[in-house]
Image 1 (cartoon, rainbow, N blue to C red):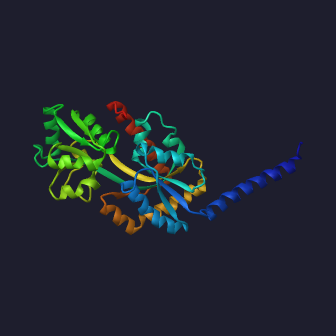
Image 2 (image 1 turned 60 degrees about the horizontal axis):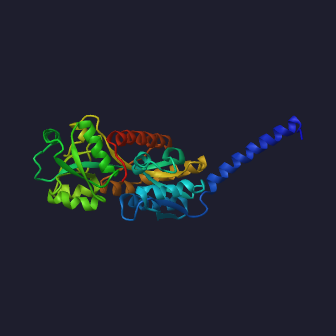
Length: 325
């Protein structure tokens, strides 16, 4: 049936108005029920901890409970897939992290693409790693460490928290940039690795600062450098690795993601409320206390950051030939 032009224009304008009203109504009424925040790692880890730290104030700001649900497995891929497959309505969110961007290249058979299938909603924190050695290790500085390892290629072991873990990737980037041959000894996480480093059985380790800082302060390990571009406020006397290896930077981070087709107005609402939570003095104090740095950005900046992180670690993983066993 052919509609008169006036009638067609009336319907078009009306449809546009209804669409605009629906989007506005969506933002104003969301959420009307509890929101799930999927933490794709077991309880007790750093990502789980920050999911709970952000979940409580976010619940208050949204006026609905934010329920943390741990869905661990396959290095975080199981929980991520749950969010990718969820309805894009803002009621299933992901505790997104640097592990996701590493996994994109590390795992060859993923059913999703982290950049394509997850929208980066808001950032939460950035964390750093640390290059540390047993106190008996001959090198006292980062420059001495590089020189010593170059003089002993393939003879120095370092402890890794596991193949494809953030500390493992940090170490491989260091090896590439410094031109040194360190040998990885892989463990099933930081917990099993630390005792061997503390005893001197394995003399070197790249670790997250949060899990090693007390050992460093107590003198049980010597920190040679942190992996961020600048020094850590928690260890101001420890140089950034970039001070003796220019251009080096490797940091972990976390934020909140949602299924890619989540309405823009809901993404904007979540972004606004999460940023407010991160900027709160109580959250800032707790984050710094844990050895991390609050990470506030625009939604566009965070999305670009995720893309950049994915591309950076893809180059390192491919160059080092890292594969999941």
